[in-house]
Figure 1 (cartoon, rainbow, N blue to C red):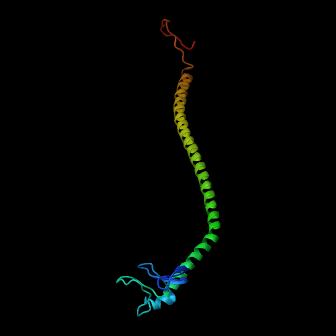
Figure 2 (spheres, rainbow, N blue to C red):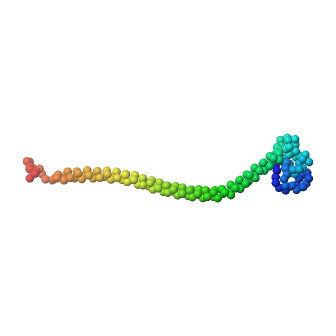
Figure 3 (cartoon, one colour):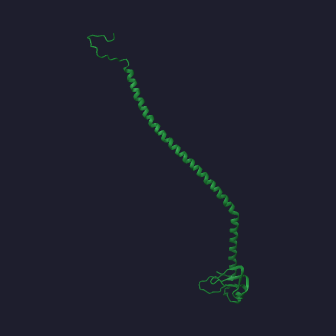
Length: 170
């Protein structure tokens, strides 16, 4: 593609320094605008061509100017976007970092709480097992105490000979 560029360069045809010129995309040769006609570097459709190649793409001066304007507009937009959005981006980045710190703090607190809850659950299980064991021991003790109360009034005397018709209540 040929392009119009605003810069100082030397024309291939007249060898003068020029501000506005046309470049051939195929060979990079520059032409002053008035010299392009003299050098016969335009074709019937008024497209600027220097090197003729079958597949080369050439554009008119108007198209080249439009392409240059698009590039300038893009550069200006990028400059303004960077100028105005960089502080906003920094602010957003700062807020994101603070948010990450907050989320990490909450996550750490959750993990601590989770560990404490797991410890409490383990302690509750241990206490329930101990409670069941103690209840069974209490049941055994209650049965033996009850048996003792029942046998409290019973007296067994050994080693005394039995007599016939003995009154045991006397």
